[in-house]
Length: 142
Image 1 (cartoon, helix red, strand yellow):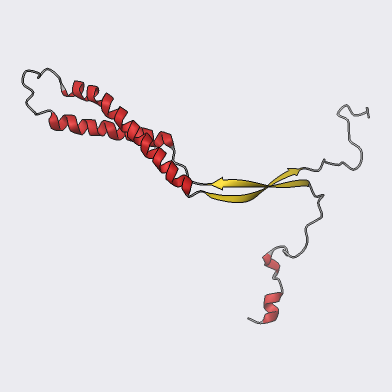
Image 2 (cartoon, one colour):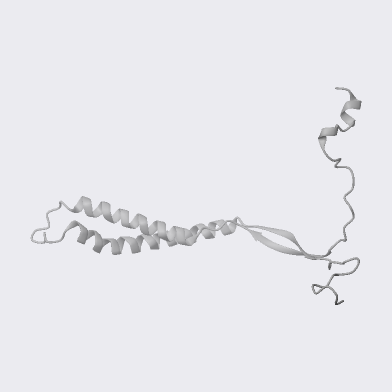
């Protein structure tokens, strides 16, 4: 391809990007520097709920494994009763462990936080101006 073919725009290329846009009134801008901290933080609710679910699953496993153990005269409790009772402990302990993991992870990630300077820009739009006369909705009144 020749150099002259590269420099000339083709008709199907669309409008030329080098032409300046029509001048619009510039809005009033005010910029102020702010110091911000950027870091990752765990979602505590997810960790607590995840720990509670894992605690319930651990309770199911422990009760099903220990169900066949000979307990002497105390054979009255069914599987559902045992799971219901021990899940109170399993869910509580699991939620507490999930919360502790979230706090430790939050402390570790807080040490890796980065402090940056950001520029806050507040733009006040220019009031609209109207050239000519404005028609009143009633027609005759000014």
